Amino acid sequence: MSADTAVPATAASSPTGPTEPQGASHPASGRSWAVFVLTMLLVVGSTVAMFLPLVPEAIGIAAIVLMLCLTFLRLPVALAMIVPALLGSYALRGELLVESTFKTLPYGQVAEWTLSVVPMFILMGLLLWRAGLTESLYVAGRKWLGWMPGGLAVGTNLAGAGLASVSGSSVGTAYALARIGIPEMLKAGYDKRLAIGAVIVAGLPGQLIPPSIMLVIYAGIAEVPIGPQLLAGIGPGVLVAVLFTVMIVIFAKRWAPTVAEEAAAQGRVTWADRFGSLVKIWPVPLLIVVIVWGMFSGTFTATEAGAVAAVVSLAITVVWKWGNGPMRAIADASVATVSSVGGIFFMLVGVEALSRMFTLTGISTGFAELVESMDLNRVTFLLMMMVVYIVLGTFMEPLPMMVLTIPILMPTLTALDVSLLWYGAFAVLMGELAVVTPPVGILAFIIHQITKEPEVNQGQDIRLNDVFNACWWFMPMAVIVTVVLIFFPEISTWLPTMASGN
Image 1 (cartoon, one colour):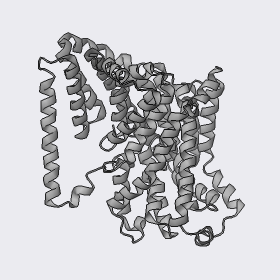
Image 2 (cartoon, one colour; image 1 turned 60 degrees about the horizontal axis):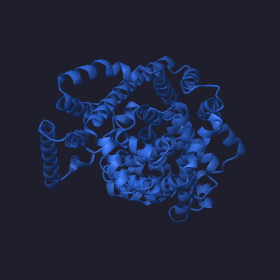
Image 3 (tube, helix red, strand yellow; image 1 turned 30 degrees about the vertical axis):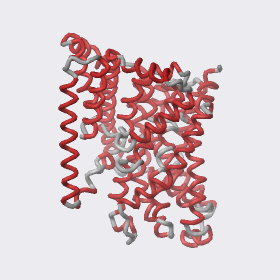
Image 4 (cartoon, one colour; image 1 turned 30 degrees about the horizontal axis):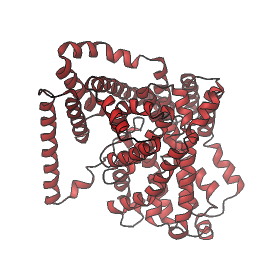
């Protein structure tokens, strides 16, 4: 699976890295071959190392290297975890352990009632996507926020938050908004850095605001309740949306036309236009409110909230697509849901297999003892992890980052009294930053590919370096948000605490 499991097929199939090298020169091709050969040597070397008479910790490190190499080679995340887990388990305890593990693990790991929320949320997002809410969200954001400096960019950013929260995919959100928002902003006179940057960061809050597939996956990995975990993402999600809006307004003073110029370019927007735009998007805020209120009040469990949202989305799709093939839209969404859920569950099996192998090697406890010997407190440890995640994000996608780090970090988080609910929001935010972090952030390549189309770039020359520059301009605010969350964890934990009545 890709980093964003619920992404529609059109977005998911978009190239990530290979788009740029197509026109590369021979030296670049030579470097690519050199990297490939080096990676394959590491694959072979780490595999052989696991069967040498080494201490268990060394076998665990070799398994980590193998997983990173397989991920780098674009092997599906689940396989990139299962292969080293299987080899490491065999090297440590022999054939009987591997046989017993894979006899019981697949069913035992995914046959959990709490995980039934996953297909519900994915089906909901895909149904709303098929119903065609993407452009309507953008139009509503533009009409309601056009009065602000950089109103088009602000509207794009907040529309992306709403869309990502129901689609479960930052990649899918950026893919859709890039086609709609970038040409509109360029025509209005926006600097390309602001136009691209507003789209790139548009999906970040949506991965924290329920329903969030990434938070559900984290809850499955960390074995925390899904309902409280979803509530723990609301505060950070709102904070991200607000601070990025502030940043866009600041940039707009230099990189966007004035409010008067923008209003003249877009035409007069009446209150009737604003309220009329809400008619086409009311399902999105309604579903978010129903899910959050239901879990917060205790009316719904997370699974029941997902079921209600899926049923409402089904009805919305029938109404929205009436006369235009609603059954085809439902069938397409259902097939895509089965595919996505299968990938997620396969990945959870891989996570548990890798976690069990790490336990046998002693890496998890060893890392906890190392942190303890360094005398790190909660804040210094989390600041260190923020740097680690940013570095990992230069060559890894969100899911591999989470599944690699969380099983190893669990004892350390417990020892430092770090809330697992809070860490879920932190890990998802850092994982989403990985999607935009150059030089291999998947969003940068997808958006660059889209901006090659004349109807999108509006005659401007937009290079990959321009997309990377737009990413870097917005990265400082992402770091500020993360630091604020570290020093004020209550932003994430207060809602789950209130909901539990403690």
